[in-house]
Length: 536
Image (cartoon, rainbow, N blue to C red; front, side, top):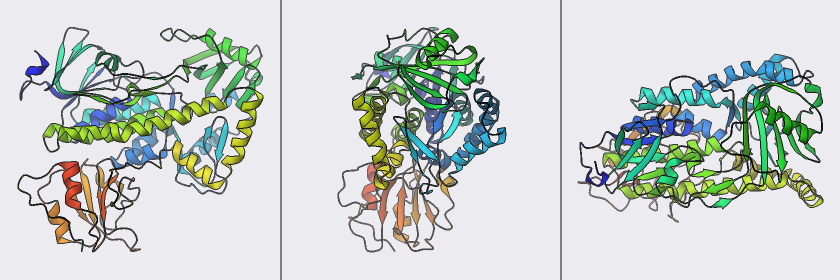
């Protein structure tokens, strides 16, 4: 059927999500939560847990987003299980390490932010926090497969349709819908299609998105769960050699050898144990022997980003929209945040409660965030290189990092804690566009008050006008709360992704709740819109 001829009743599903990694599955779960039907097409099996120990670092901002949906606990449980499985590997790589429970304690304390610790690295320069100024900032190591499994279960629980072992071979967009053609001859008709199918995205290519950027300058070969016959030959941590950089057990159980100006590898070829061993030997200058590797990989500092994340009814999310080196552990977090931003907007457009122009705010908000990640990723790759100039720059950078303001900026950058979505309203309250990290108005519950996927109007004064403003709006829930310390605004309108859309105080005539509601959730047909809403 021609996509241009789509009408009500002619679609199989509201949204087709191509790609069943953490980003695609989390997006599908968000769509299902918000009342939109979704199907996920994934070339590998989704129902069976992948046999891969590959770790992803989940940052503070992402953990707070997951907490809004009640997903923090299952993700932490998955991480704890992974730590138990990796303890033996970590000890095997470094016989001089502390006892096994110390390995678990080290990572657990990093997760919980108990005092100081390393909050990340920039070009091998550690961002330490000895004074404990960032107690809530942590990087949680979670196996990719386990993260995927948590989101898979959530998506399935929201009725998401799962199409396993199939690939999309063609995409036919039109003004009223999109048809995705599968390799088995089937077609899925949808109102929208989202490509979350990784850095080599088929959707991006088929739909005509551009992908400008910079070519790789380094090649890294590594492995998870690696066994060495002679582990004493490799130094642990970050080590610079005349031939490259070694990262040994920086992530528990992981070995990586980085070479500069290395010949490009065949991107589609399988990484072998022999390739990993050869790279480790070249960079370390030793004859170290790899006896087993369960999950070898390679990556580069290739950095690219589509200039737009939307072309009509086709959108991109995660690595399909942007790729960069894994330095700083920002990739999967960037993609999950894309999904959190897009999911509720797309569902509201599909249900007709918001105009399709709302989808343009997805690119407007998320593109600058990814552009900044690409910038700091390129900078980290540059700082890894050799030469007296780079060495001097790295030493200077290490000194600058010790300045409190610089350290704060870099930690917040790596953990995406400084994101502010600019709504172009100069008179808006300073909180508008920031993440509502503390929704704990007494009596209004805690972060899980956004678990239903709706926006939340938190009212500390019990204003009848505020409650009336959201009466009849299914997308917004009103909740009475109080500020025991009497700090902050009297009321907050919090978007489903946790960002503040409106904030007001008694007598504040500059911020208009009605305008914010209309902007994000569409005007009510019978609504008589006043110029401002009094608070209190």
